[in-house]
Image 1 (cartoon, rainbow, N blue to C red):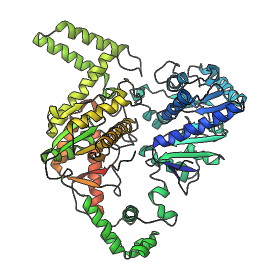
Image 2: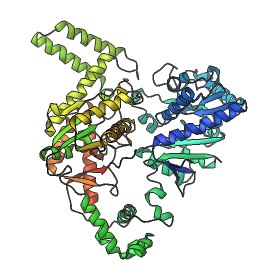
Image 3: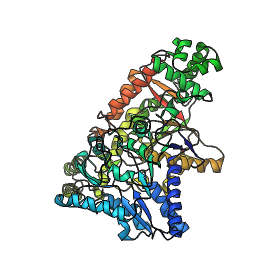
Image 4: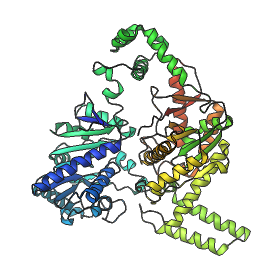
Length: 625
């Protein structure tokens, strides 16, 4: 295993935590390339089992680079894909056939006859025979040498949903509710997601010679824990991988955060205590005992396996007071100081700023700081078709009322209506429709900014190129994306930056935006020798854990009310049925309110001052997330 990965003890499947998802995918690409080269040298074929989705994309990009720059030869490679949606043609935008050709196959020299992807157009009466032939093709190829897997939030591998048999083979299955909800954004609406798919079976997967499963982000943390530490069960199909002699989980820190060795390593044995681990252990003890910090006693530490802390640091009172003072120091009414400063908040979508840190924005403006917000993408794919038609109709009506260019607006209204009505389920919008949806999102952002006290001159709409595809699948970020971000930072010259550090965003935009900002900051620091202070906020999905919070901004009832009013201005985002959150059907304002009030409640439960609500932040240490 690479030096930048560490082994996770106490798991039922070998698991490794990498410093970043990029390091993990680069490692997997290197393993695949080494296998291909060694087989090529022997005149043998390499058989790869491939997966789709956002997780393996970086693997394929590394392989393409090695083919183009290092002459990695794929002419002896045979591939078998895990699955395909049933009912989709190979040219459909969301088909895995199209995904694989655009993401990998058209860039390398794998012979067309060596590429195998399940056919989603097979007639129902032929499906069973087709699946048998797919299995036979794998056997004729000599079996799969390396199988790449992701993991669904319900534990599926391939499309093997919970409660399927361990011995299943390639077959047609019905998709689980969670799986379809997670795919809703790809199809622009939950109703557009197919209900069935063709997939390799668990038994088929387990016959591969080597299996590598990758999982990144907080939204995978719970199911990763269930798969590698919980019982082997049909409820979690990925748990069957522990039967394989060479299967491993490759994780980033976020996906590994709920594993025992990461969340409570003292439970497994001896640890080296530092300030961060002491804080984590004591806050964990408060949770276990349901006690406030200053109510913990020596017996609590002994009964929960923390007697080593008593030996090393003395009494429970001394340890608890140490953590109490540290938590008190996180409470900050004025996060950018009391002296006027220039502040820049980067918002991946046009509503992340108010959803995630709207109360803090209000406080910064009240503190007379010069506050700027940069919206990194248009967010147009999250707008309903009917909203776009309504705006086109409104434009026509207004022009008629005021006698302005009636002919052009009527033509636009007709064009937009035709584009929307003729669009098939899951197809991307036309350019005109995307422009209208972009205008809707930006208009809402301006209205929300007005609620917070932000003038339009302080709002910056970057519309970064990587996002401009009209689909949920984005282009890889380029130097152009980094340049646009760097130039804005250099023009505003903020002393403090706010960045979305929420890697549980299931569609990956937050992660990509963070990487772009960090690259820009690295360039600035290399050129000037310094960079602004960077605070990371979380998105709508969850808050920072108490032990990592470094700044907690108290909010009054009025602060939270104003924040919710700003969120309300994002009218086009009020129906979560289009892009349902992870097991959370609530509206964004509800999630935000509950999260902010829950953070304040946790502080209160720890015996700290009681506040109505709080927003939390972590300082960026210059490392990749």
